[in-house]
Image 1 (cartoon, rainbow, N blue to C red):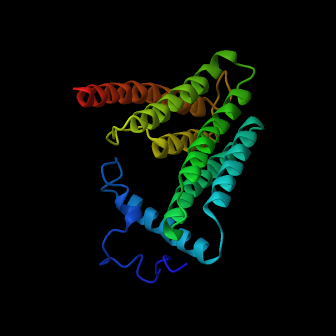
Image 2 (cartoon, one colour):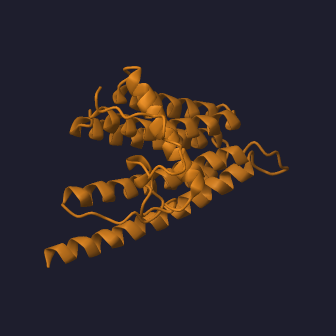
Image 3 (cartoon, rainbow, N blue to C red):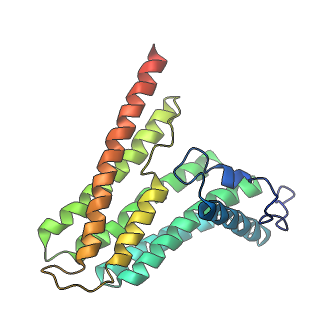
Length: 232
């Protein structure tokens, strides 16, 4: 455990950005004070868990459990609770990577496990949305498109990097997708007179599906440019 860092200065304003905060570079959140503070909190949580002897894989599994519970809650109409669980699951997904790096236990198997379970965690709340709208079959199209397009974004990035090319950050990465879904679920708690339950949630999920499709097309175009340039 000698690689575990000291936490006493993590939030000191004069301390340079940590490795975890530096991961925001090139993303939409790079200049956000809130995001940078949040990543310092993630780093502090990772250090604390490391001292407690908790493994990164344990946090990965816990993140999945909360995502699945979020999906169950959506299916039963507990939308506010589901939104909180989605945010908790997404936060733990950041913690597990930080914990692996803090303890020096990062491995190719751990990376594969994390990526695989992330796809399940991405789908679980949206599957809950499909169940929620079981009486309005047309409404299920939005979460289904969001699931498929989100998978495409993650797959194209992973496959392109496996082919030896690094892609820019772009947008609609997992952080944006998690925030959009959590926000959509939270909107579902607002009661409105409508022909369909939780119309604001459906609107949010529909927006997420559209942005995911745009993100999928964008990353495919970027991958084509990168791979063709490398081939030349």
